[in-house]
Length: 427
Image 1: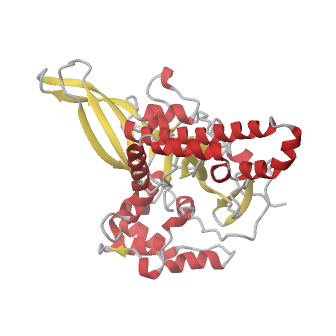
Image 2 (image 1 turned 135 degrees about the vertical axis):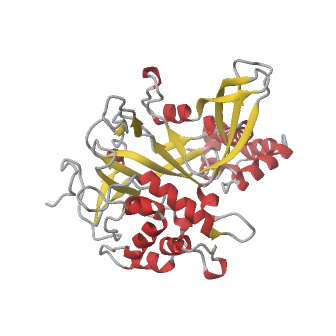
Image 3 (image 1 turned 30 degrees about the horizontal axis):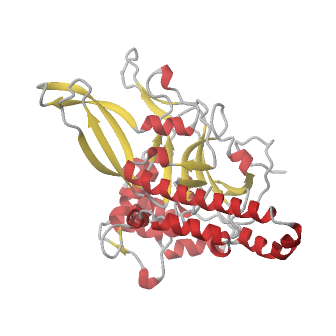
């Protein structure tokens, strides 16, 4: 059997004649972005409006063009995106740098991803303002600065746009090393900086706390695995780029409630409470039906089954509980629904995102190694445990269990960029 180069042959996989692959050329982020189905061009009468911008416009057309998607869907053979790569290197000269051997140098997948999104955000405008990128991946971050050295110093609140959350792995001290994605995200939203204090009349260390004020339908998470290490004892003192190999585990569902500001938390909590009330009412209705005398139970079995299938529509007790929850604080409920819908999320969103794409990196060198793309395979039924692995021009299958093992700690592939999509309803 033939196995993908650079991977262990112990994991179950097979060569596919399915989705087409893209030959090398910084393919992994591109394959993952293609997993965001909403990023495809819409119907012609709802098309985007690329702004004029020279090479940036050409790049946007190459990445988002209908012809490229049709080509990918129409064949199982590898495609060489030569025009896209030429436009990429013309727009971003750093991606045209060459290594010692004369070939193109290895580049950071996150730098490519961020550069692409910045260019597309400036080029793909939506009618009525805004852009396609931020409507899919853009978050509003609420940053609060406080001065611990002077309580009289007023708090500074800032808002900014971000297109990813950062999982900080090291944190700077031994005690801050993390073992799980939740810990790393929490650490990445906190920090400190030196800033002038008007009351003290000098610079002081301020504490920075960030929270998400506006979510998006899709969420990108970057594992901060690469960092710059100073080398004061070296001849040129230039430093060296290093990779953190520490394992950081993750799950296939991400709860963003702890990372949101109070307004978003209130909207998410209201939906969770409502969902919990529905489950509790359904449980009580089922218990009441099972406690009926045997002579009545036979008559009501059909109604009880329908109550289990659609308790909010069929069971009177549950309907009353839902109506009560809707009546209580109806103004707040409308406000919460409007806030979530402004984020492009369903009105019943409960703060959960599901993992559907990964860009992994293999190797100990930050300037070398190998990137691969992993995309969850869709079956149209919402239940699937298979993933597709894009390794240059090879496509193979993997499993959910193997994906959960891309946490690092060895020389094999480890997750570097993760992409989540909002889940509707409960977990």
